[in-house]
Length: 431
Image (cartoon, rainbow, N blue to C red; front, top):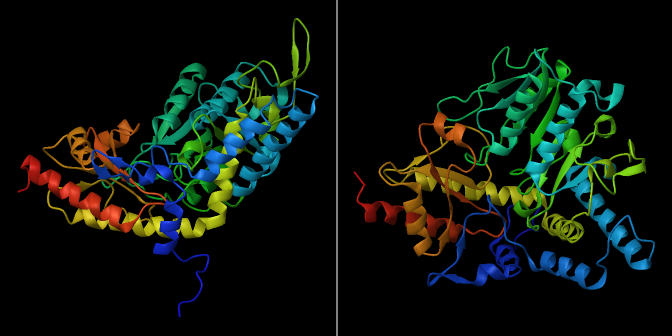
């Protein structure tokens, strides 16, 4: 008789089958084959509980939040704020430290523009630590998604600050060195998990180094929050961003976590209705955070659906999700490495992984690999994955990426590996 699973056990085969039953799209065929969905790193599928939660809100409670005095508006506001509390609990934050955004890209831009606005005198004395000018430095890394690179490039251009980059070694691992984070550093923006390599970065030393010189830290948690336990307070980051559609939720919803005292000091980015207290024809006073950063009509049904996604993940247990995906990640990397002619990006990095791997087959463009796999019903991502500098550093222009989630199975990974091997045979590039 087997014992009951513990919090660190991986998911059993029976549990995975039960989970898969919650995702109608996984029961479909593509090009005459059962769908093998290995593109969750781009966007995850949604369980019935999430689809039903949004539909129920829209059919029973739909109303503008924080505005109407009628019963429906009050109930909608309560559900909306409960969604905020649910996400806050999920990442170890306080309720008033969660700002709703359209996606993680907007959340990063929100922080970058707060620095920019502070640099032209907005926000008063409280915003002093956000002001940038010549001689100040912004630090990011060579492996970042474009969403965590371009906003900082633009901020540097607007303020005269210098953008510094932590480089990668030949395997693709971060190579922190002396003098990369200095007393001139004002913010460090770093990804928790690479969306190309799948490695979980050892960011603790970088966070400590940044804080030792008074710099702030923004964590891109888009590829960590859906796949492993995340506690922003334990990590001691100042800001973190995530995206709903990568963690079983809908598109059009993301979130910014910010320390309360920092959000209180930050000047707003988007302005307009719903984020003010008093307005005259010449000036305005703003609400405290998080509402200060939530101008206009909010993403109410999407927030409700994201909260349902969080509850779904919590019901399974994030340590168990992480264990399941770590096993699939090892299976992906080991299986791809064993196929002659395949180069797995970051295969030599000795770090824990999520269930994601990217690879190159010299002589076959990634788009051709993706098309061949798609003909067999296998969905993967091809291209540069919004990380051109990382690909350039590793000597490739594009790659093929397979990414798993809690509903992925070993048999799907094996079908994918067989498909990759068949791709090489079809194009005749095997040595």
